[in-house]
Image (cartoon, rainbow, N blue to C red):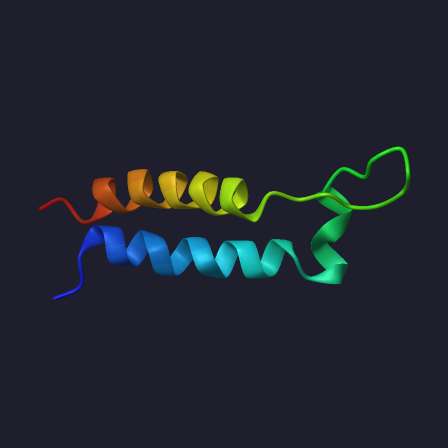
Length: 61
């Protein structure tokens, strides 16, 4: 059986992938130099924590 942590991990990877698509990158703030600077690990952990919280409510052990 898949754990809630594994579910959250899978969803977090998907969320980061979608957020980094060019058509969705408008939500990523640009720096003064016009370049986009992202912290993929921060994006992942934020998505993971949100997913795990939601999944734990839905799939209580």
